[in-house]
Length: 305
Image (cartoon, rainbow, N blue to C red):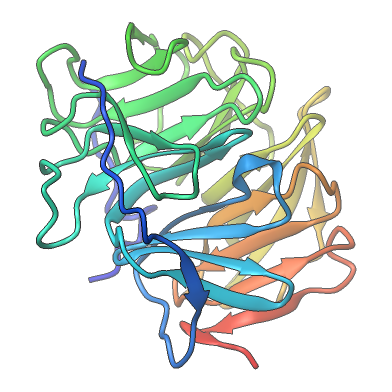
């Protein structure tokens, strides 16, 4: 069942092992007659011109107008976060895998061929992760206590070896969409919520709501701006957030109804005008000219020819 994150998210906040599993035959093959469902994250890992999506059944990537899917390691990736050397994730191993369930915090630097176990392997499934693309700082919203962490928002500067809890002062929403971290500033993050966008400049210890923001389902940060999606007046509207002033302005948006909100946003940080969005109904749109034109590359999970 698909999970509308803004509604069924978190209603309250009380809020190490190493190794890897490998498949030497792991590769990506062209996706034919594939229906994409249960998308759990998107991004552009490894500083490459490739869009990755994490699904309930493994990884897919979009390159040169063609979709490819992993032929193995079809894990249920949750909290998928791309960064300059690869991706971080959590979730559950595919059926028949010798990996423990849940995966805890893992990373891959080879497109998913191998997974390095960073923290809470076999113990925790993090649905809410965020990572600095350049800085590699990781923020995790822990929903259930584990062996080291209580519930709440935590950060790690060393890929899971040590964790610090964020105070979250000023954040007063009871439901969130996602967490986004500035690519290089370890202390700057934003949270989308049913009450608007909240921004922190001190590693999540305090937050300030961005003026004139309403119910927000997703947000993503680049070096100088953020892009977030709101539900308003029966439709979906994207907004650009200027990080130096916290001012917002409307951003060109595909025609979407309020019943099909934007769940994921990502940007190709090597190409400042390239953005990709994923909706609740598994529509995927991409632009390479800062919203001047949007191309629909997946329609309700069906790959566009």
